[in-house]
Image 1: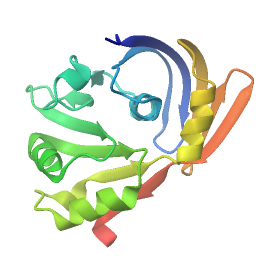
Image 2: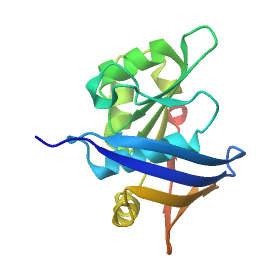
Image 3: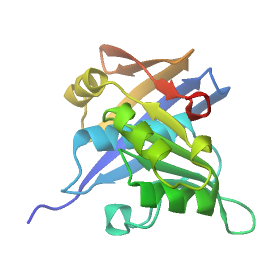
Amino acid sequence: MATPSLYRFRIDLSNIDQGIYDRLDFRMVIHPSENHAYLLTRMLAYALNAQEGLKFSAEGLGDPDAPPISLEDPRGGLSLWIDIGNPSARRMHKATKAARRVMIYTYKNPEILIAEIQGGNIFQGEKIEVFSLPEEFLTELEANLERDNTWSVLLSDGALTVGAGSETITGELGRHDLSRR
């Protein structure tokens, strides 16, 4: 039976779009059933939303009801729920009822996710923020993935640039506005 693997990320973050500049140092576990695209999307979602109190799910994929990344409000509720991939309409409905803000970062076809949000009976579905990462961008990142990573991440006007070792990888962080569809 395969065992989980631990990855360390030291990130020099410049998120110009949100005015977040930080040095992050965190570890992530990849479950044997997870692929590297999921891991890298989760890492970027965490880094791009870095703030005090932001945390990964304690159980990871072992707790299917918990968001992969979340931020609690002072009263113990959720102010932010970040999901990865293409979650089901039922899960998105639960997320929008549980948190004030819901974001989804997908490494899959965003149109499938958007159609599910718009076609499903999801509480305040139009408020879900959907971001997508191109497959080729994640494939290039994966080629530079090591167990111990020191990377720079720059987001400016939707252009995402990652410095990984001697490589510079650039891709577009797609933002899909559901309120205008």
